[in-house]
Image (cartoon, rainbow, N blue to C red; front, side, top):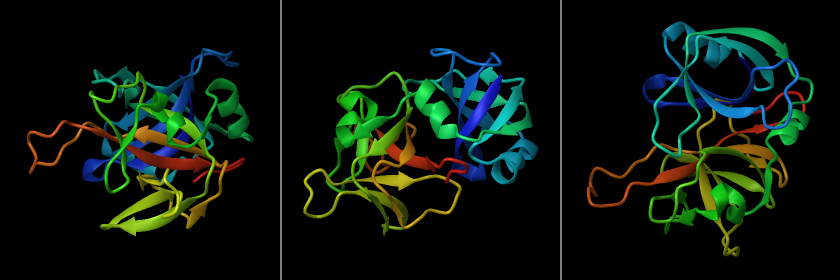
Length: 220
């Protein structure tokens, strides 16, 4: 299958995950493109993911295997072989044609199922509802500003005077920028189910994170 790279993100133990849009046919039609999360299966592929391939590149991916997953993380595939195909001139046009973005605030993220912690982090849980996907494209209607909060780089939506203020951890490999203008096409995803070891009775959550942003020719 062919895969347009839309994000490169960090995983545990220095592993790399590549977010993409995948299709089988030469010229895909509406409904034939799906969101995928490519998981590296060996160190050589991980190094290629980290250094060689960029957002906006199209890969030919072979030997992929669907990973048995727990919803909402239904996009995971193991990758055994990849090769560069081309760079897409206008990935935004392709994305909007096959997987249109949502524009607005947190109400448009993950079918409106997100909630906000006291610290401002967005999450979903079984209590709030679990969407049938864990990756999507978003055009925020306000600027996102980079801040370091408790040692984690996070993008902040809104400000102290905005009741809708919330934060997203940045997990992309490219260096973050100080601000992402409103209406920029960004990719957001749900982290794996998690709860603090110190709170074993707490309901597990999937936190919303920002994987990257897409530009006309090259994205971050």
